[in-house]
Length: 241
Image (cartoon, rainbow, N blue to C red):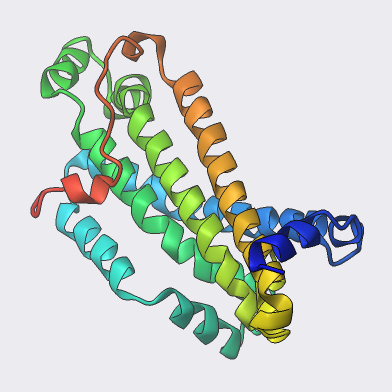
């Protein structure tokens, strides 16, 4: 029997879905860990990125943070944090994953504010808007496409990376893959493939849902504009502010 047939049989077994350690429970766990990590990343990155974009400072720092995040291996943080005083469990995993969510959130928030047309800012100031009013009524609404894009990129990236948390007993769908490897590829190859397919399907589903939400949240005044922010806002950041 081929690995593909084994994967189909494994997915068609109701017990693999409904038992306390099955697909449904692991999917909920995976989503909860990922959502908490992205929420923590938003709490840190968005206020900082919006402020830096509003004042027009910090571009080199954003580039540095983004580049460093690409250089640090994912597994490194997932294994280092559980060995500290934080210990094993969700807190260490969530903190590790949030560090991978921060760069796209920060980069897109900063770039979204800096991409606002200077003439629009001048018009707002000419109308007597204060700095806070200009940010709230002009800059943030115009930055929605970038903020939403950064959130979507961060969410899908964290969902995919959370699979590796299983190797430090972090839970999620990665546990299905990890236990499949524990059985050996001959006996557990189908389970490994099934786990990989479940992760891929989850990421694609979340990507699609967030893309629809991104479109729905776009201000009506911007829906006629065909321009979309770059897939990776970090690639569009200037070297200097």
